Image (cartoon, rainbow, N blue to C red):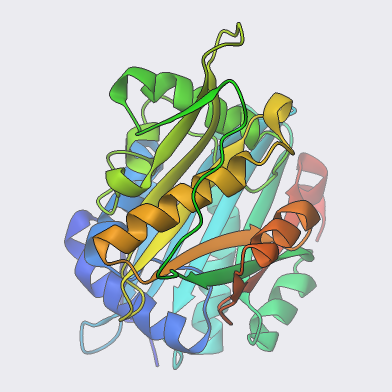
Length: 327
């Protein structure tokens, strides 16, 4: 399959991109959005500065058959983190894949220079069964750094009651705590090189303004009795998961700030979600976790989560001026 033309992605492409992503996820899953509203939200989250770093390819029937995206994931330890996304119809020719890959690398260099960063790291995903794609990335200097596990849990008829540690209060997500929840999120994920650390502009699309946001299944844990600039000790934001026929809630982001870890907070929040999910007719919970997060994996498996078969590999590569000079 050939690509006859490329254009910048706009909200008008959300439905055809979702159709492409659904086809890809059926054979080589990498966690792409499969509903038009979720794709539209993804594009909105990029913001005006990065919207030009997208590329939609159409074949000779004017069907969307390829997509590329370069996204600014924020800076950590003076290193700019850049996410590369490439998505292809299974029949797209190899030279088209190579062309888009080189375009993504060039766009990443421009983004690094625009941000005034000396160092940047590129991250991308590859389906576990996509051996050819993984070999192409490795030949260009990428290395597999972890495997992302996709786990699911059937909602039981009689979920366990949440047990809260002393001094903590579970509350629905409230706009009064919106900025504090964002700060808690970024602090909880500070050690993750792949996690998005939203700013004030991008946080709403990541959380409460996401089109799939489930307020009844989302919650905060507040440390009301302990003096702190930020009482949000832990958080859970849930989204509707439209990737399966089974009514499913995706635990989109779940985290605990360091001072409150290993205290059963995640278990308490998931127990709360199970109760809410059962009442709402949700039959399954789903989440993603990196295989290097051994404690989280052990907890989720203890709670009954099992592999869904939709995991993928994460590959990374340094992007420095020295690397630019290499042939």
